[in-house]
Length: 307
Image (cartoon, rainbow, N blue to C red):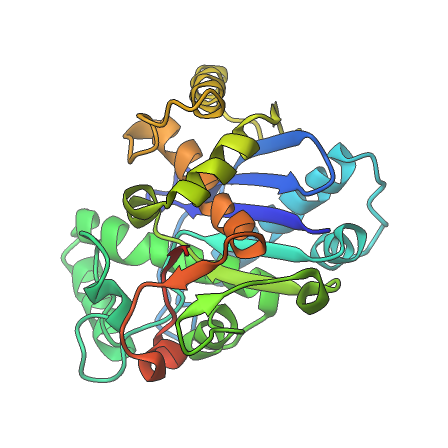
């Protein structure tokens, strides 16, 4: 038994992330949006994950609040003063969390991670020094597009990762997402390995849509048959929710034309669902690392797709 959670971070300041969650023992599919309109994304070069303390606290509180709402949606109380993430791991028998954001930086001197060389078009992640210096230059130039597309959403992603494992560095996050990786670049997370623990994965929905196997699409069809529900306190717009429900109905009926990258809020909601599906794949058909160098994966992290 486990709780499966997917996060699709944002970098514009309008949202921290869209999220989707499903318990393996419940018939609901819970979709929500994490946001705090009173806190802006603010870069800080002082230390990883390079966001202001206000932003980091806001993101971690939103993640914890979302998990608390998920616990309540399943009929359990949230213990006063308890860490809802730890409580969820105990209640559900473990958490498998996937995040649509890089789990590491490229090794020194490289402009792209090994995993990104094998994925379809994406905003490459350079080594840490280059990443920070580029962010500082774009801030000085007030150049918002690269900040939103190449910097901020990645830092929000790093902050979400650290909400679950308290990592003090990107290298530590990379190590966590490659846990259990075989020499054939496969990860499977059976009950015996989960047992109340938290496992993290890195998602890239565009690659997931393009490469999902027939076995993976069967899992999508099965998951789409659940009852979609809003998460109290984390609701998405009703129009987006209605479109999301229509997509799920089509998937469940075997129509996967909509299993692709889409624009706007519906694309964010779908990306959160696709990201969560990696957790299901890891528990069933397995996930495969998109990369060539096993050595580099350990320090850079890796995108995974259905095996």
